[in-house]
Image 1 (tube, rainbow, N blue to C red):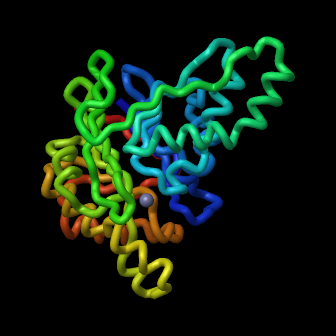
Image 2 (image 1 turned 90 degrees about the vertical axis):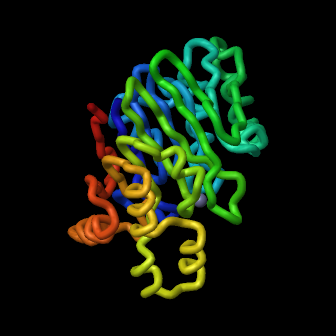
Length: 275
Ligand SMILES: [Zn+2]
């Protein structure tokens, strides 16, 4: 199993960091978690793409995590030679989101159906709304979900991918919570969105200060990893994006609370999850 960080950025546009998105390459195919800005550009760099995603998992519907949902729907449909429904698994509200996105795409769907004689079907999605439990199973690959705490954004999910004794958790945006601890128990890798509390408090801008109460700081993330016996921690969705050369500050802050490996994500960072 491979973990590929497609986008390590946040809502703030950054020339080096695409929006939040993580690809888990498994025996059951490419599983995509969230689909932030430029997700398909980054997927193209690792020979994946809209038509190749086995399933799309959404942690929540904050705009930065779903910016390019419409691009995935359109490319999967318009570039396919046969109907190829997209499986989408997310929290309650995902079905309404898919319906609204498809409505937004209606003019484009009409243009393409009218123009391409061999394109005779509309884009289709199979949506599963979940609040926990096993949400995907194929052979040795299993994905489970649990409710997390990103209040006042509700509901939100974290996910855990298990394959042949190896495991990866995608936390999404959350503060430390029981649901996430449950997913993380004994996991090999935890991919967690992270904010630098110390830097944000220095800026002291009200709009930025607001993000502190529903995201995990570096220390929060590290304590979650330590409490659950996680082996490797990947910090992603970095706010603010680290200036070049300052990644070690993030690692040092995490290692004050966690003994395992700590990695600061960059786009296309790839980790092999082995025994
Ligand atoms: Zn969020």
